[in-house]
Image (cartoon, rainbow, N blue to C red; front, top):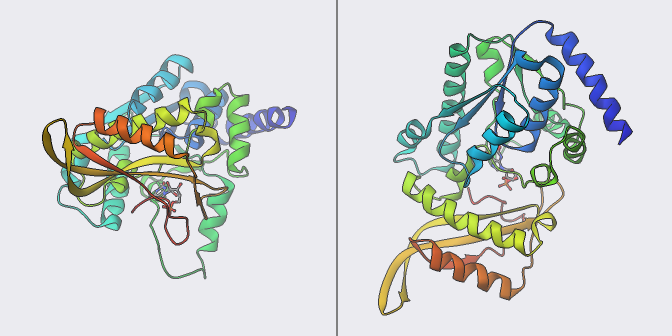
Length: 319
Ligand code: XMP
């Protein structure tokens, strides 16, 4: 795509002009946006860029390893990985309110990020994968509805507190354009086409208290579900699919024994922008297969249900 090739060249020149010989730090989420921003910036200024990936223990199966492989091995981009699972789990202990989870995770993310930035000697610039819809959405809040449904966590508080200028090379792009740019920069289709994943991660897919044990159970169920979706060739037809671990135990029977374990809900939706969504109409044989596998393979789950709620009235995430 020559248009994206041109965009890439223009942005590289702009980034060089903006940054000069300064140092840039970029928080990676593992998602497409921050990854594409980081790769583009690295192409412009090389090792003046350091990426920081905070593992808050709320990631999906193998997610951290995938980021490490991609950035260190494939692109050779300086990457600091922070294992912050313990402090996030400690802070989430006893927290059940969805907004309190989000606020804590957002604030703690900033704390960890700031500490790491200091450790590497600080930076002059903060890179973010802000897209055009993010720019519009924050503007439209002025005079918009006064009801906050969910306070989406991002790193908005960082630049002011850390006294850094922003580098946001994707500000003019929509999501589908970022995907084209990602491919232009050599990212493979599987990475570029990944479903969105919320900043607070698995914490908002575990109604009630979040614990490491619950995250481990959910990670396994989610991995089985996504593996089956990929095997069935359905991944790209779905906007977002994930498992939710309910804090509800029900009675079951397995072999000769009684079980008393948690319920897992499966969610899959189609959407164009996440603002509205329809449920994905799986065939029942598919859902049966996933259900059987999860119950057989994931200790702690003995019942699987499918969420049949569109948005509105439901939201995509359960919290
Ligand atoms: P909802 O649940 O509001 O989600 O229908 C719409 C889209 O936003 C994502 N989402 C979040 N993303 N921080 C994020 O970065 C959040 O706190 C958050 N909550 C929801 C959700 O995964 C979906 O893509």
